[in-house]
Length: 200
Image (cartoon, rainbow, N blue to C red; front, side, top):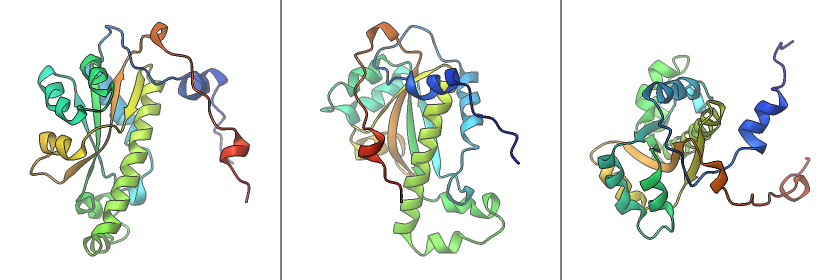
């Protein structure tokens, strides 16, 4: 029998019910050690076949932000949010993630399966990198940070700016820092269990 116990209500609140997507930030900076700690947590989250296709770029310099701006033009307030956020994470996927399969999933030779079916490989890369992005957001909240994920950007422009000549491809971006709580807007509603769920 598992010895694990449910997390405390306050911990669950920090991860879910009290957590918010922030659009304004304090002046407190995120240390490099915090970003490393964040990765050391999220790398343990499950992915398909333990193949870990997610790749992360922590954009924090002004030069890095300038590379992001063209991909955010015409996307509402997203450019402003990236301009103001001390860190923006590009959650990407490596299209050749399965080249590491012999090391990461040694119990079975799955590499030929992905080599033979590019569409299948892309679907696994997208789903598993999305999972890792979700782990990143929860782990960041667990470390006392705030996040705001965004899918409003021009993929081709972002990929050309950051991943030209590589096998990496952007999935989504997420600003990351310590949020300015007084500037939060009222919380939007959520669907009820009855609206969103079925028991089968």
